[in-house]
Amino acid sequence: MSDLTLILLAAGSSSRFSQDVKKQWLRIGHKPLWQFVADRLQKSNFFSHVIVVAAADEIEFMKQYASFDFVIGGASRQESLSNALSHVTTKYVLVNDIARACISQTLLEKIIEKKDSADVIVPYLQVTDTVVYENETIDRNKVKRVQTPQLSQTKILKQALETKEVFTDESSAIVAYGGSRTFILGEDDAHKLTYVHDITKLPCLTPPSKDILSGNGFDVHAFDDKGEMWLGGVKIESDFGFKAHSDGDVAIHALIDALLGAAGMGDIGMMFPDNDDAYKDIDSKELLKRVVKKIYNFGFVIINADLTIAAQTPRIGKYKLQMRKILAEILGIDSSRMNIKATTTEKLGFIGRSEGVGVIANANLKYYDWKMIEEI
Image (cartoon, rainbow, N blue to C red; front, side, top):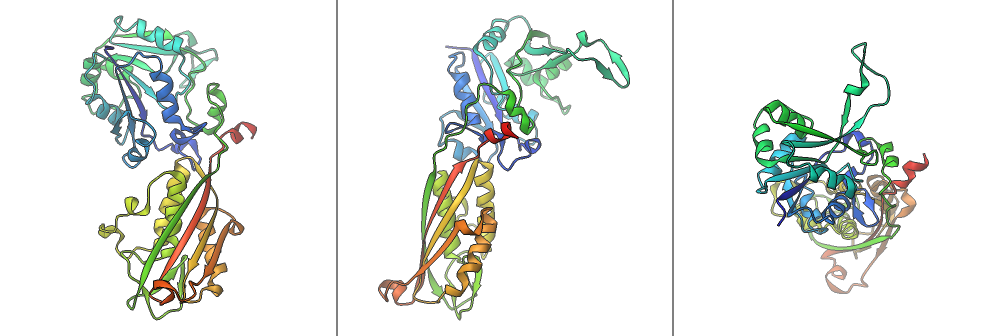
């Protein structure tokens, strides 16, 4: 069995990427970038163990894509790495940033072949431009552009990170600790995706799938003579409201389930449990905003949504246009793509007896098309 563990760091906020989507959730076909990189490196068969470090609120969704070991990241790259290292038992560990997607088999082999030559093996690129540091021109032959992945002696790396000093890569920590470092020539294609236009420098990436992803939602709420009635984000003139843990906006709840269903993210009860006091009497528009933000962060784009509100009472015809505008603004789509329909149940069932309201919702998503960046 291999004595080498792979750690992939994917817990970053992507703040420098300057898009609604987090870069680790850019789609390559149907795969998010983090899975594409993990699968690509795992195929080399060099690793006995693969660990993916991710944000706490992303791990459950990641588990639906792959069966790697997932570890919660920290506030910094170094803290995330330390969290992962606590799960490593092999003699060697290879650490790569998920944003460095196009690592070739050749580069991997070169790094691994050198594993016993130093405490850490580091790929680098030569500098061809003139370099000026603090107004002094320095010898560019003495400057190296350090890349990942880096292969380290696990024991040494763990010890080197037992410090409050912050390092931007493993080799800096190991050298500061007194360990040895060997450099090998890296590859231009092993470019790191940091800013949005860096994506044009990653030749191994193929476009996202153009499939349309559909989801539906259904919710009902009984009437309650306490509180106000909110429906589709609009306050309805009524002598009663809904029995609910939140404000009871049954239309938004159904819409949330449709969006989550299209994205494969479970349902509203998983994301906002009705036994959690944090959501007691909360404005459902706030819940929808949180869901929409996550939808876009995770690499989806909302195409359209459609609601059918079944109610014997109240009559909602005069509110439909306002609902469309409010919900469309939250979803980030034109109001023409946020449809609202109203019907009765011809006085049949609990809805017909004016005991409550039921709503059916449908939503369609697509993947964020990062190929557009190349055309700008």
